[in-house]
Length: 201
Ligand code: ATP
Ligand code: MG
Image 1 (spheres, protein in one colour):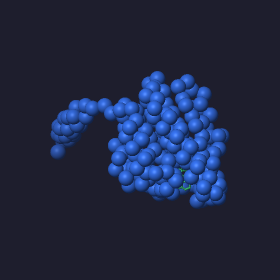
Image 2 (cartoon, protein in one colour):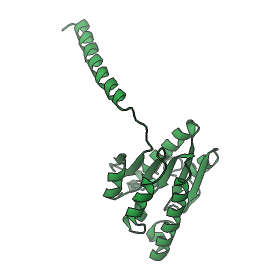
Image 3 (cartoon, helix red, strand yellow):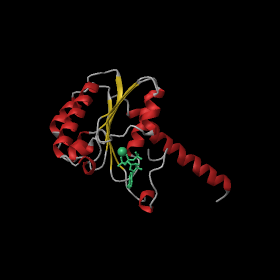
C-alpha cells in the first residue's frame, strides 16, 4: 500500500468517525442541572470539583461550596476561591472521626452542615454547588439518606451539584447523572511524602 493509499484510508475512517461523533453530539440537545458524584479511593475528587468551580466562575456564574469534614481553613483552594466575586464558601466540618472522637458531636455537625447546604439549594442564583466530602456523613449514617436525596431532588432545575468523597452510597450514585470513581493506583503519601502545597492542599 502506498503512502497516498494510507493517507486516503485514514481520511475515510476519520470522516466516518466524525459523522458518528457529530450525530451523538446533535442527539444531546437537553439542558439540566446535573448531580455529579466523584468517589473512589484515588486522588482527584475534590480537585476535580474545584476545577468545575473555576469553569463556572469563568462563565460569570455564581457558585457555592460546603465542606462537610474539613475543619481547616488554610487550603489553597479556599484562599483562591474566596477572593473571587460570586463565591459562597462554608467550612462546616470539624475533622475526621478519629480526630473529633465524639459521635454525637459528629452527628450534630453533619446536621448543621446539611441545613447550610439546603440554604444554598434555596438560592437559584447559585449555578453550581460543591458538597465536598458529603459521602462520609452519609455512609456513617449521620444524615438520613432519603432526606438528603429528597432535598437534592427538590433543588432548582438548573442548579448543578457536585458531591465528593470515598464510599458514596449506591442510592446516591443511582440518583446522580454523572458518577466517576477515582482508582488509587499509587499515592506519594505511602512513600513517606507529606501533603504538598499546590498539589494536596
Ligand atoms: P484531592 O483534594 O487532592 O483531589 P481527594 O479529594 O480525591 O484529593 P481525599 O480523600 O479528600 O481525596 O483526600 C484529601 C487529601 O488526601 C489530599 O491531600 C490528597 O492528596 C490525599 N489523598 C487522596 N487520595 C489518597 C490516597 N489514596 N492515599 C493517600 N492520600 C490520599
Ligand atoms: Mg477530597
